[in-house]
Image 1 (cartoon, rainbow, N blue to C red):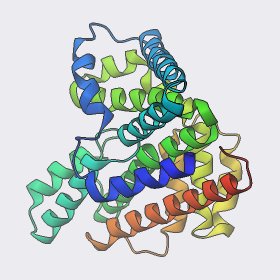
Image 2: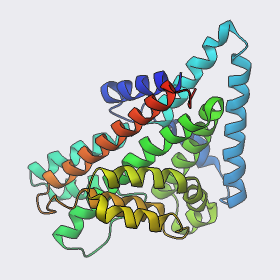
Image 3: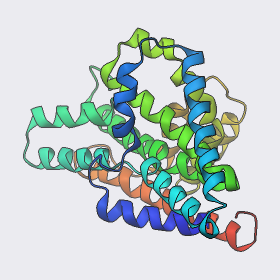
Length: 284
């Protein structure tokens, strides 16, 4: 069932998810606006409450009409939590702005694409293009690989945990866009996601590494297994850069396209792994 839901979601996302209509953050934004304070315990409580309520709904629906409502609910949750429709639109807008040599629009789209981790100031052209690649790789991880991990590995708990993870991810995005740096730090959302992303980041990292230069990437990946302090953004982007090292960071169109191509290959690889594990009974 997990494999069926995953294939359905990815197909739907590619065809129809071109904006934020199917983004969880859009529907949670009014709730985030009403939050009067930002704290670690508040973020943890919100996440646990969302996951618990989701699990309770799934449990209730599982006993109705042969469990079909529970399956439908799982599909809706996956649609809301997997995929980056709005950012895909921004990526296409950025490429169009590059082709039109519209620097102002380029910067506007880049600000959206890099709003979580930020763009380094005063960088050379090569460093700027590398940061764009890293941002696209991270978008693939945050909105595809990590959610797929939580959906796939936890069996019947998957949709509930995915909903909690999606809530945290949406909250982080909202804070990056609407809150101050102090409020974001007080929320503790970055720290929570740091630990939730630790294992998915290593799995994504080895996927990126094996798609590129394994002789260089594998030592870095092994070192990351005992690294609990570096940001997951750094770990994922560093390993992905090994796979992109043959691509010159000079062309403003081809460079981001190379990152997106790698991201698609990584997602396809993960789907194949999920399919194999499902066939052999390791996943439900």
